[in-house]
Length: 77
Image (cartoon, rainbow, N blue to C red; front, top):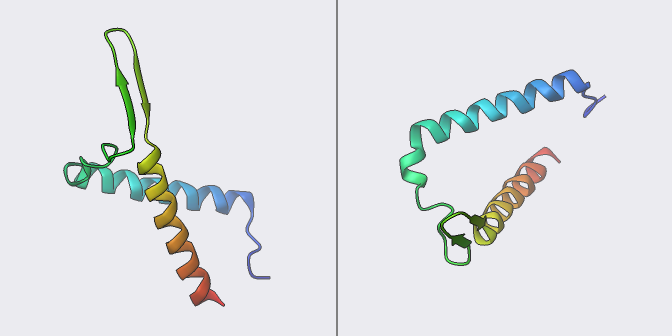
């Protein structure tokens, strides 16, 4: 049955995805230095306090993931 995944397989896939993302960030982290500093990201830094709320960055990630999922869904039909 398609889409019949056990929890163990799902955890393995999530782990592999996290390893790939971690490796990408490790090797290409310098090229992503702009990420998190986009206009619209809220950053407040005081002497004893830091607050960071990356609104624009999270909207960008959400948009990119939505596009990727829709493309994958289109090809899997």
